[in-house]
Amino acid sequence: HKELELLYINKGRGKRYIGSHIDYFRGGELILIGAYLPHYSFMEPVLKDQKKISVQLREGFPGVSMLMFPEMQPVKQLLERARRGISFYGDTKRKVGNKVEKLFDATPQQRFISFLDILVDLALSEEYEVLNSGDYQLEITPQDNERLRTIFNFVREQFTRPISLEEIAEKTSMTPQSFARYFK
Figure 1 (cartoon, rainbow, N blue to C red):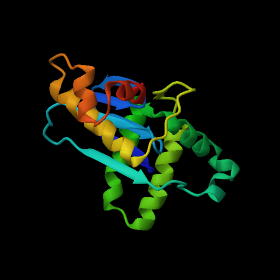
Figure 2 (cartoon, one colour; figure 1 turned 180 degrees about the vertical axis):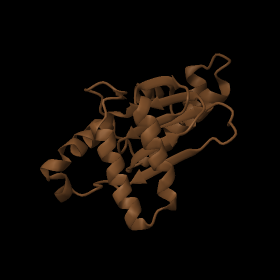
Figure 3 (spheres, helix red, strand yellow; figure 1 turned 90 degrees about the vertical axis):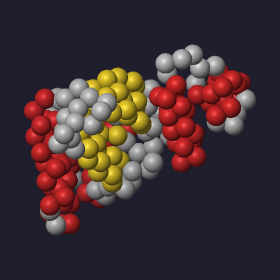
Figure 4 (tube, rainbow, N blue to C red; figure 1 turned 90 degrees about the horizontal axis):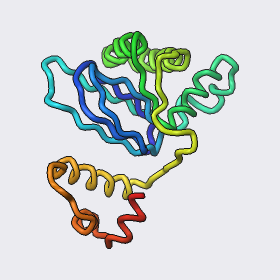
């Protein structure tokens, strides 16, 4: 999708797929995902009091003119790094996670200001990992996103057995050769 996304999961574990990055997470998750970056996660059984909050922002948030201010340069750099996906940990995850949970009780104006505050916290944090290499670039269309979702769902449901190239290509209405080129 074309939105920037901040995803916060207060506790639990699972597996995440973000671009070419595949990894497990434990103890919750705080990730910032750039626009058009393919992503998918598999949560293990839902825990009591588990919260999964996704905040999606339109392309261009908070605005080109606002990002031109010198004070906003760390946020501008953060948004550029987000194109590769960023996972936050430690005190940053806890502190920002608490702020994300409070967004829903705020007025629209307070929500806007609070989210800028969250972006500043993330921009200044050193507790992060960029998830994809510097040369990773993939922007996909909504149709491609649906095709990838079909592939991931099928693999998730059938991962305990061998899956042939022909079988998965058929799920996406592609020839095996086309599927191999597409998925590469």
